[in-house]
Structure formats: structure tokens, C-alpha cells
Image 1: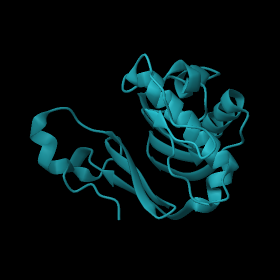
Image 2: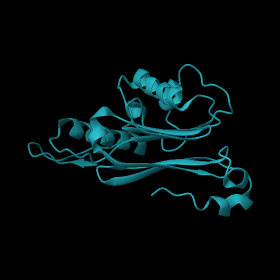
Image 3: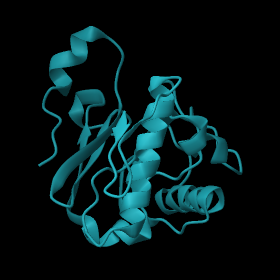
Image 4: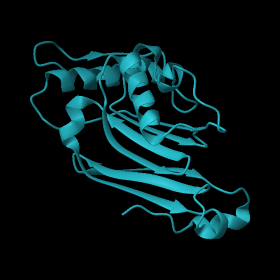
Length: 198
């Protein structure tokens, strides 16, 4: 990577890994956003998590879950502790009530990040839940929030199986989150093809 400054001659930076390079670039983007006068962000970070609770109440703290790096492209440890801009959290077989679950997630985020995240949407279908939270400074960037649910249980009338979804615009960029708890078996694929968010 070559850094060109108006005050100094260009210099080349070498990184020991792609992960270190990506971490450096992310930190530069965060610094730019913190000191920039522009209102729109170039890059945001989104946490998406899902959990089949199996009807068991959650532990008192979910901090290890909302701060995990996941199994995908894990960030470098230098930025792994930075909070995401958006959290979309889905559960299946959740024994908690809708409001109780949303407050549990919000309290966990507050404890893990010292930020009072704002709830954008909460959609439930029986014990299937999807909650979306955003950093307070991004609340004004969210518009056109829509929610939907589709029952796919017995005769497409029972809500123990199905999907819930939330769609929104973040600074004009559309995002959609779907959480589902479906009946096993590939013969059911056509049955689920009609699930959509408008």
C-alpha cells in the first residue's frame, strides 16, 4: 500500500497479512468518519447472529455472542473489539416474550459496548424473533422500515415454523434481514420460495 501525503513524500507500507492490512484500512475509515464533516458514512459494520434456543431461557449475559468474530472473515484483533453500527439478532424457539427479549439484547449491547443502541425493528412469529438495533448516531440514517412474517407450519397456518423479516434503508442503501425456522427436508423448498419483504 502506498500512502501519498501532500506534506511528505509518498511511502510504502507493507503488512504481514491481509488481515492486518484490512484492519489498518478499517481504522483509517473510522478515523475519517470521526473527523469528517460529511454526513454519510463510506463503510458500516453489521453484526448478524442467529440462535436456535431450543426453548431454553438465555443466560444472564449474551456478551460473548455479540462480541464474537464469527466463523467468516474475522477482523484483526486490533479492531475486533470495536462495536458494529448495526446488530440484527434472530432466534428460534425463544421462550422469552418479545419485549423481554429485545430488552435483553439491548442491555447486552449496552454492557458490551457502553453504547445505548436504538431499536429499529422487532418482528416475531410465535417463538421466532428478529430484532434490529443501530448506534444512536445512525438513527437518522434509517428510513422505510418494514417488517413481515410468513407462517409455514401445518397447512401454512401454524406459526411454529416460518420466517420473520425486517427491511430498511440506511442512507438510501437497502438492507434486508430474514430469520427463519423451517421444517427439515428438501421437499419443502418450493413451499418457502414465496417468503419476501417489500
